[in-house]
Image 1 (cartoon, rainbow, N blue to C red):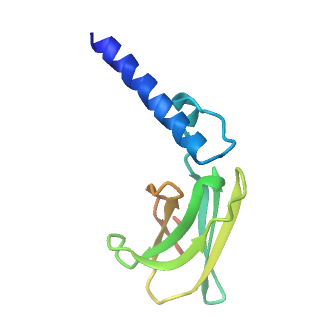
Image 2: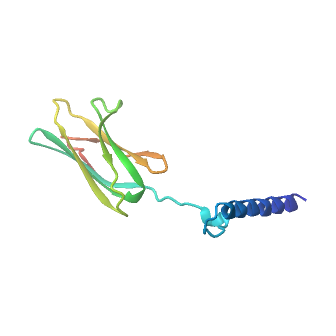
Image 3: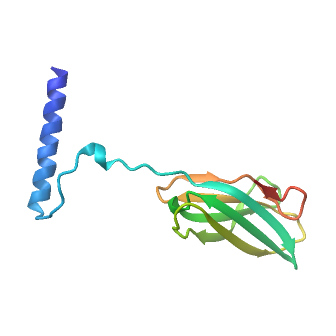
Length: 140
């Protein structure tokens, strides 16, 4: 009985969806629910480097799955625990890999940096933390 009820609901919803499309006088063909799935590829930070030169900190990073990235928040911390946004970089939308960089004025304190990746679907991910101007200024 449960299977019969499920089949009835699926048929009723399909007919309702189809009638709704017809009522809008659109030429969109009926789509099966299984064809409406969206699979998002994750954004991966392939490299993240911080170098100090001419009293500036240069941060470079390369991502894969770039087309899914909406924006990158560059965050900094003087203690490695509490991070604040230092810069906002919008994703280019280019497919696959892309490269980004940002400059910041060097401070007397060695700063830790990380990238907060905000995906188009709202998900958030973080890069590993690097320290610009020290031995540990690169991740690969």
